[in-house]
Amino acid sequence: MIKSILCIGAGYVGGPTMAVIAKHCPEVQVVVADINADRVAAWQSGHPPIYEPGLVDVLNASLGRNLRFTADIDGAIRDAEMIFVSVNTPTKAFGRGSGKAADLQYWEKTARSILQNAQGHKIVVEKSTLPVRTAEAMERILQSGNGGARFDILSNPEFLAEGTAIADLEQPDRVLIGGAETADGRAAIEALVEVYAKWVPRERILTTNVWSAELSKLAANAFLAQRVSSINAVSAICESTGANVLEVARAIGSDRRIGASFLKAGVGFGGSCFQKDILNLVYLCEHHGLDEVARYWESVVTMNQLQKRRFVDRMLRAMFNTLADKRIAVFGFAFKADTGDTRDSPAIQVCRELLAEQARVCVTDPQALPAARRDLADAGPRLSFAPDPYEAARSAHAIALLTDWHEYRELDFERLYASMQKPAFLFDGRNLLEAERLYEIGFNVYSIGRPPLSRL
Image (tube, one colour):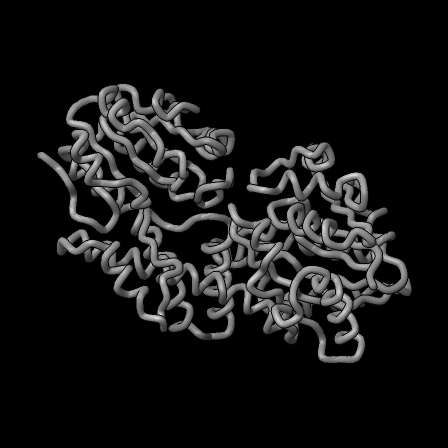
């Protein structure tokens, strides 16, 4: 049984994953290392730098017992038997493959650090989302040294959803482990299987070759994003024909071959994974000459961009074809509820397009305002922020709901309506609210994929 585990990278994946492993494997010393000293200090203090329901309790169950955080990456590499690599692999923003390919510079620097500091035998586990056959490149780097260290490379992609990450780790649908089809590879796979088997039923632990594991992560996110873009495409048809996307989704989802998951129309998907992984898949297809396949997957992202533009276009048409000098209260900036993460959030594009129309935008969000300030730092004086949604809506011409926070259901909409300019508009980008009740209060209500309820 492995006795010491290191994870390089204390982000949204590395921190929660290692906290859960430490909780269920008290006999294993778990270390999380990161180059960001402030991030390390936050984790080590028991107040993590990310928001995730249930994380604080899981973290503090093991912190100081068999879990610690450090900025000494080199020393941690020397001491660990198994090393998870969970560093950032954003979409490349320069050079060849810009806008599609994964930027692997942090991944390669980590591989070289492992090579320089490792002693003896190490099992290196890819946790970051990576292009197919990246493990092969990792192996070439690690085998290039002459220090006598020996390595086995595994792929163990994460399938976490922000907002439910702890639940996903505690009761996963599956754990996927890919390794070499050799005696050493199978032994390395079994070593990681034994870690997860402390709390995950063995029938849920799937083993494959490395390439299948790497591709499965990209394909899973591509399939999920495809469903979101598909129902959003249907929502556009609904708005043009008078159909109701909620009713259409219920009819589609009742077919057991399709199912109801990820058939919730909205203003678009966001987060760090979907768009990045699809574009990575597009680049992979183009690299292998599969241009038609690449265009198919690229259309999922195209539809997502269109959905955000359509949302603003509908606001513009409803509000007499001008938003200039009108106050718009944006309810929610995180890409989804129960997280403070704003990476690729639809709210970023929506806010920028509203500002481009000379609107005055006030953003409120229970968790994501610090990130929103960073994301829109260059927006200028027509942008403001308010922790209190009632303050954000005061004297507003419209509310644009962009994140499905549960607390927005509980707001006093009669109070909100009374404080707003008339006619008052509410654009529900998540189909979160009861449109009929809002209409009775006096709002002109525009929900995604549904006929408007308006007195105008």
